[in-house]
Image 1 (cartoon, helix red, strand yellow):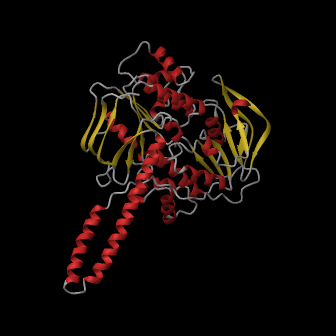
Image 2 (cartoon, rainbow, N blue to C red):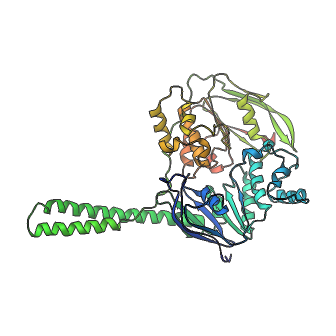
Length: 486
């Protein structure tokens, strides 16, 4: 595709929330019209911050962010804002406009068709599944027909059909699109280039090419930088050893030592800043609660949504969940998978029950189980049977959550950091039952094999919803409940 004039430009941008911890420092790059660009970087590196700088929600501390005069911008957020949950669908779309639009119902029906949603417009958003909400977030951005479309983790909660449809839409989208996503296969199908945020240098590197080629180029560059620095370090140490030997000698030897010092200083200046490959969390173990009963949970019937109406389905045989059971719940977006988990945890699912005294570790796709007003270390401390700060900080560090990060309120963390915080909680909690609703959402793809191994090795019971099929394949599933074929 031919790309036109520059539509977004960052020129020597410095941005920080904390003056001692800049997210961007001297960041410069440009994006041309009609380009499809991926933004890469570690959790918390500042990817979403770039979006907010483009929209003007945030202002740089130094430097300049500019967009083409008159260019319209729309963002599809990662998660539905809580203040929108009580709105109806038509009320939600009305927020995209500054004035009343009389043809709004017609426009909404058209855009819902684009994202493959068939919903009554008076339905409240809180009653939608995570996948339906994800499509609604995208639809709100699309209805504005923006010149610059910003997508933040758009595949979260989408089933395979939803991801396929979104991919086709982006390939055909005639305008500029910037995407933050950890879904490598999705990104590789339409990316023209990558903006890579290095959390070590706070710089932004720009690459041209599809996603997998860029990944290879970045990793090759990291290896070249490491190799060059390793060679220089050996040379510097060799010279320093000679300096120590010659400095105590007289005459020419002392002058040689002085010359070697100059060479060491030059070599140290030649050392390059190594780009930091995304750190991967270390292997971890979720220890299961001891003394759990034989049957941890039982499911006899489930409530599902058929044509937007609640319907109860009786299972031909009850599902008994015991230690080391790993149950996956399948079905299309909107059929009621997340609703089933919520009811099960709350004890409201009439056709299922969990044994008493079972500690439940619950990963909710929107992290609503976390208290956003508490600090991260407080939400970790509250799940520990025997609170111990040393254990808490050591466990958090396994998930790349430093002591400085733990002092922040949960609501201020990136979505990826909230996800890792949940896993740290499970390690400290030692639950007897893990209930996981899209546990790969917002998580850097480098961490996923480590997380899959931990779940596969977990000796308690696991109930899982996930559209990440490659992730699920790494877990030895023992039971399947497909709500779509009951």
